[in-house]
Length: 102
Image 1: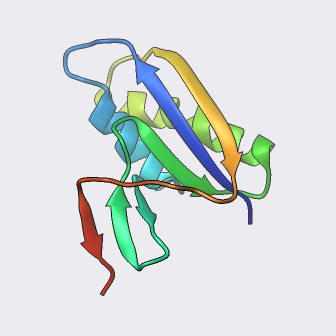
Image 2: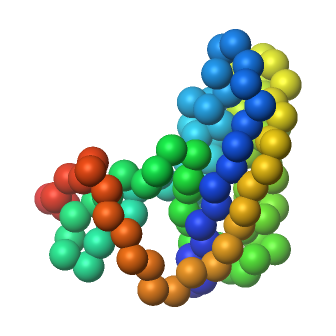
């Protein structure tokens, strides 16, 4: 299944909408960690998520659904100021936060 990466900026608010947005993304099949070929899980940069979906339209639908779920949890509106959604095949990454797979 194709893999997608999304990164986004949300408008400042109090409380911060980022935790609710991240949690909603995870419920919809996105992740904030990426598995390396060496078997270590690496934490992605803030406001970055990855997921496997059938195609770009499915990934876009899942990304767009995050907002309404997060708004319900936060009980407040969220403004997605910008985002990018791309399919990837051979990632290269590093993170100062990682854990070994058990």
